[in-house]
Image 1: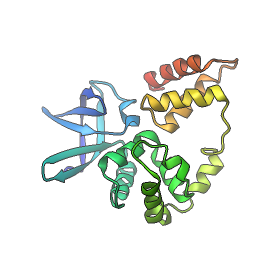
Image 2: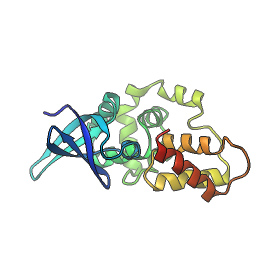
Image 3: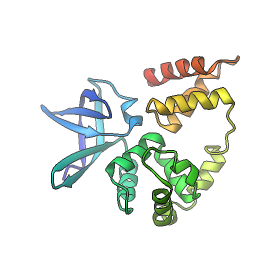
Image 4: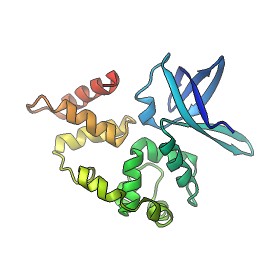
Length: 200
């Protein structure tokens, strides 16, 4: 079993990346949050999990051991496959997912493509005890209670639609608005994308 890879980013293919490890190219499916931070030629360490099926062998990669563990915990829930688990991690960061499950936030979980109400309910039922207390930390940091202006909310939705995670979209928009002044939705998105592209 491959548990970790260290090498260079060779190529980015949609939601996957090819990683060159001593001359061997590994094709990994990873959350969008990781894809947004990397570029070809970059040195990278990823924690990996192999999913074996009768007609398929797929490799999934994660930026941290904790993110990988959350992926495995979600796979243990009936009805959650690798695609749904990656979709959750691509839309929200690990902390937001754990907090949403702990606080039984069905509305947030069902915003994720491929996650219906019944699937979200199963996630909450089977995992909420493991994440108890995480929702308190999220509430204290304002992760779910921060009010958004209409243009800010629209800009955030645009970034999510482009494949960025919720937390990185919020951080980039916060930085975009630090200069003050009123920005249109389009201006907010453009400034946020510049921050996301620079990796700072």
